[in-house]
Image 1 (tube, rainbow, N blue to C red):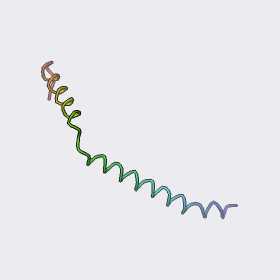
Image 2: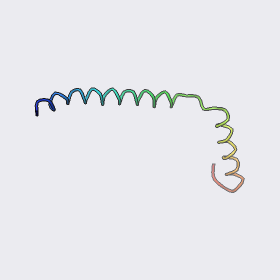
Image 3: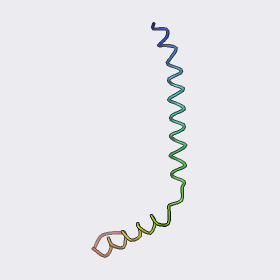
Image 4: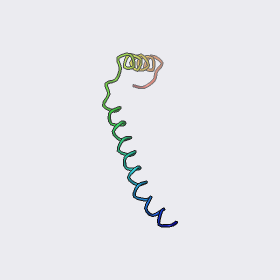
Length: 57
C-alpha cells in the first residue's frame, strides 16, 4: 500500500509543475496584453475627477 503512494509522488509533482507552468504562461500573456482604449479612457476620467476633487495624481 505504501509503495503505491510513493509511486504517485513523482506523478503528482509532474502535474503540479505542469499546472504551475501553465498558470505562469497565462499570467505573462495577460500582463503583455494591450490595455483596451475604453478602459484607458475610463482610467483617465477617474484621474481627472480625482484631481478636480482635490485628490492626488
